[in-house]
Image (cartoon, rainbow, N blue to C red; front, top):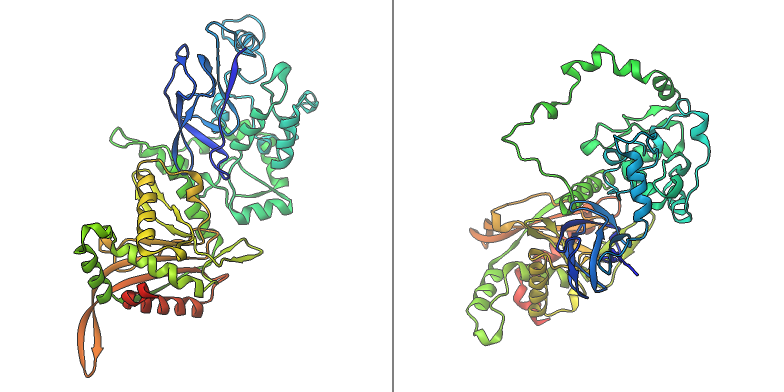
Length: 486
């Protein structure tokens, strides 16, 4: 009997993955623990091993497709063995073939569809938002059979399942159809979501915000929307709509010289989270600097220390991380998460460390950082950074941070505005070291100072506590050698 291969869960927060590449092809002999495919989550790349031995009978998704976790992606069994449901899919394929004399089957194609490509792959599968009650025929309003899992998912996500075209047996609406409908729905800004929740507004298929996001300005009154949908053909054939003036500027910029890069995986997550961070938090950045003479002197001594001590790899950034980890416990208001209704202040410091990788910015978490020695903290930070660069980091190692440090000092940046990593309420930017005039007695001398840029969520953290944290952190950095003794 054929064995289904299910996409395993990749951490507690991962809901879907993207198949990067199939390592085995249909017809290949597979052993237990052989790598079937490589997948990319929104945070890391990992391999999916085979739980069974046999012949790879079928793959249900192609490279590049987005797949929900716990979904069946392939079948393994004896060579020549029929895959469950293959006969039914073959029958539907024959009915939908162009040369067939019979009427086209109105159900979705049997080939499993990627949730992020529902419209292109299944023209009869429409978002419930785009369907007007005026344009529906009485037949389309008849309730179609729906599986229990599909019904529960539709209820949770607010999808009108009876309006969907099913791809299951006999036109039955299955979970995949609901997932495709959810993916087809446009994304809304927080303000637009609130307006729609209050009622009286309709959501267009695409908005004017970044990536087609629907803003509050894009929403239209429900009554006006119905008037527009009475004669959609007439509107679409208007000469004005065909004018080059109405075309998007981006469509006129396509050129063989331009490389088109799909926004997905880590880059997609970064784009969405950065926009969400700025739209949903009140961000304020404070800039300061700390005397770096003790920092540089200690780093020099560490670099020249005996190799047997194993501390030569400790960097300036490690020393700053150590100072942050030891300072934060006295400022629980900054070592906190904000859920919108509650503030969770933490006694332990789970320190996020920003890492620049070819796939984009990643923030692994050093757990219980305030309890680690300098050597331990340095080793753990390097281990996590290496795992990010080699795409071996696990999703759980990228979650749970309570405060983040990002360092651009190596690039000569004197000051910048770090963007919050919600639900965290603070993030520290570390800048370069440069000379700064310092008063010594009645004279002014130049001394090296390291720049510090602290961004806070002003909804939760006031300016004075943030300034006190920066001041205390600056003193800890200026006396870093004494901090190691404590």
